[in-house]
Structures are given as C-alpha cells and as structure tokens.
Length: 461
Picture 1 (cartoon, rainbow, N blue to C red):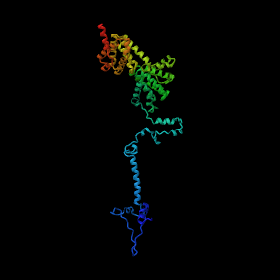
Picture 2: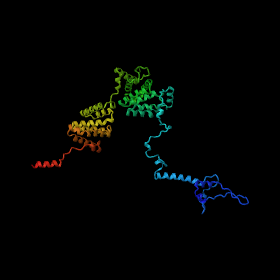
Picture 3: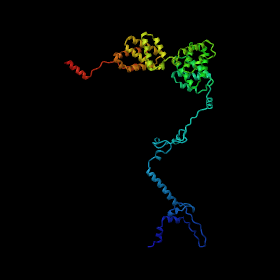
Picture 4: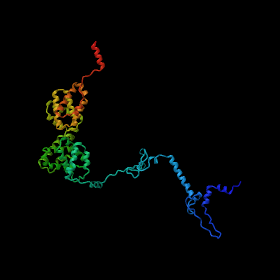
C-alpha cells in the first residue's frame, strides 16, 4: 500500500529533515509580482512553535545548531565515561597538581640525566673519550705562580707560625706543605727556612725531630738545596739574637746541620763552604756539626740524633720505659725525677697507660708504702694537670675491668683498690664519678633456702 503524504513525511530520516532545513527557501511572490525577503527565524523559545525551527541559525554559511549539539553531546559523553572509570581518584595517579613532586615511588625509578647537567656522564660517549697526558710547560707554571699572593716576611708570625705549632701537635707535614703552596715563596725561601728553624730551637727534642722531617719533605716538594744553604747561613748570622732566649742555640743549630746533611737536605761540603762566619757562635755551630758528622761513619745513624721519644716509639717500647720509670720511683721515692721523666716522654695522649701501670704495680706490691707513693705521685701529677682527668679516668677504668684477673694472683686486690680510691678521694683528685665505676666490695655469700634447709637438717642430726 502506498504511503500517504503524511506518513511519507513521518518516515523521513533526520538527515533528510536537516537537509530541508538547511536549504534556502524560495521567496514568496504576491499577485502583483513583488517578492519579499526570506523571513528570518528569531532564535528563542516560543510557545507552540516547532522544535525543529530552533535548528536554523543566523547566516546561510553557519553550521547547523543540531550538528553542533551532536558533537558536543559526544564530547560530554566521553568525559562522562572517563569520570565514571576514575571517580574519586587523583589526577595523573597523584603526580599532578600544584606543589606535587611526582607520583609516589617515582624516586625509586632511574633518574633522568640532563645532558646539560655538569655531572652528566654518558657511557656511550665515554667510549669516544681519549685520555691524553699533557705536561705543563714552564710558562704555565710561572703563570700559575703569578696568580698566588706573594708572602712577606712580616706575615710569618700570622701565616706561618700557627701552622708550624699545629704541626708539632699532629705531625701532618702535608698540611704544612699545602699551606705553603698557597703563597708565592720565590723571594722569601731563605728567610722562611731560617724562621722555621728558629721556632724549632725553642721546643723539645720531639718537635726538633718533627722539624727535621719537615725540612726533608720540603726539599722534595718546594725548596732546593741552594734555598736551604741560604737559610742555614741566615740562621747562623742571627745566632747573636737567638742566644739571648736560648743559650744552647749554637749547639742545637749544629745538630740541625748534621741531621740535614744525613737527610741530604744540605750537601756535606756545607761544612767547608766559605761564607761570612767570623763570629764565635757561628763557628761553634759548625764545629758541633762537623764533630757529629765525623764520628758517624754511616750518616743514617744521625737519623736518630734527636732520640726516639714519645710518639716515635713503639707501644711496647713506650710501655717498657713507663715501667722502668715506675720501678725507679719506687726504689728512690723521688717524685720530681719521676715527673721530669714522664714529661720527657712527651706522650700526653698515653698517660692513661702510666696510670694503669702504676696502679697494677701497686696492687702487685700490696704494701702500704707502695700505696702512699702511688697516691702522692698521682696527686701531684693531677693537680699540676700533667695528667688530665680524662686520662686518669681511663687508667682507673682499665684497672677496674681487669680486677677479676688480677684477683687470681692478688686475692685482696679489691680491698687494695678501695684503699687507693678512698685516699685519692680524700686528697681531692678522684671524684664520685670514678668511684662509682669501681666494682663492689666482696660480700659474704648468702646461702639459698635449699642450702639453709639442708644445713638445718644436718644440725638437727
């Protein structure tokens, strides 16, 4: 059955309707032949108006409103689907947003290296790198030296003396050399050698030994043999002033010369080198050096000319010297000589060994005289701060830890150490902190309940 005209209109598809709406209408003509303009559809909602009229937009080339609505509806439908799948979750899995440093756990991943980063090192590019050894020329070395500040003799007190005194404490020659490399020494090398030696004249033999080793290291790093020859000559010219504070300066200077010859810092011909040495003190220094060099056929024997003391001794040798000191003090009772010998060892960091050894010696003797001698000597050493509180505490702690082993040979060791502590506390150089570290006195053993019951049964029988 053919479709009616009404049904045919209803059967039209939406695309056909859109095409009809987009097509321009023919102008209506009146009977007199006048054609009017196309009536424009006013955008807006009207009661009873057809909804399809709203699809017509202004202008013949504009996009249909219905087509726009279809595109927008697809957009929002896609957004809705995404929002349904990720509802309640943060953006970018927590890696997005202001003030966020990245997704949790990203710090465990391999970091990205920027090629502009100064620390960037590509393994692929490393294969193409060729290492070339380039020796600096004399012009480059001179240019480097010219950039350094020039050291003046007036700056020795502020720049050099503190470094040398610190070297006497730590014995680190590299620190001294690194400090000197920060200055241009080309004009003051002889004055600097003389100044360093004048500092050594005022210190003990351990410092002199360190200074001789420093001269040997400077010979390898900064100074030449000619610099040392000029420096020692300048030192001998200044002996008239140095002897005012150090009367033994000429003999000590001669010992420095002999040791420098043994270390190949000075040539052996220095002893016969013609320099202005007409004064008596300079000749005395040269004669002293000449005697030391002549009596030592093998110059390596002069390497111990300042003696092996303090930190230059092995621990076993140092312990033996401490035990000899303690034995001599016990035999003579001369506290002044014992203090002098301990100071001459120059090992303040090892005084806890002296405290330990003298306490152990006293416990082995076990006499009242040994206890009195030990307490008196420790009192003088502590009150004059020759032995510091820390060293004293370490020495007592070491003897406390070994009391169980000492008690095997000395059964009354606990009573003896308690007597020493009480006398030391009464004299004021041992405080409560050290006494609290001492082990408890031996007490009478209490029998257990089982033993007590067994003893009662035996008594009743």
